[in-house]
Image (tube, rainbow, N blue to C red; front, side, top):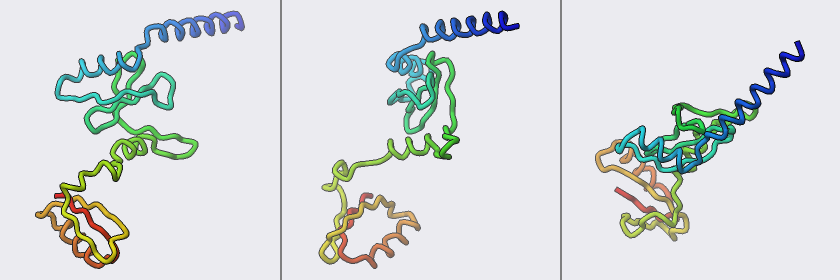
Length: 150
């Protein structure tokens, strides 16, 4: 029995080593995924995920996962069970975050109330009812500079 277990273990080890030889690097994975998804999909980035052999793929504004051979594309959320953290949501937030210095302040409607010491950027639509409610709420603020982007 132990002899069979030893043979099975060695076989699995060799199989694992053989499959890693054929693994693609991040640039190759990006090229392969782009080729398979077509020109309507913009593969922005490929990075290793916390799981060995699994890569995070940013396509347009979404996050997918793929294996090291770019054979499978997985859509869904990755959750770290020990902490309960949703790793996909965290990455999506990181990707969507915009630095204050990157905002085109020259293109915004600027309103200064009081001394304007606090700053806020608002992205609104003149036809949006919720945006109109927000504008009424913002009128109650003092000592603020509001940059309104339409």
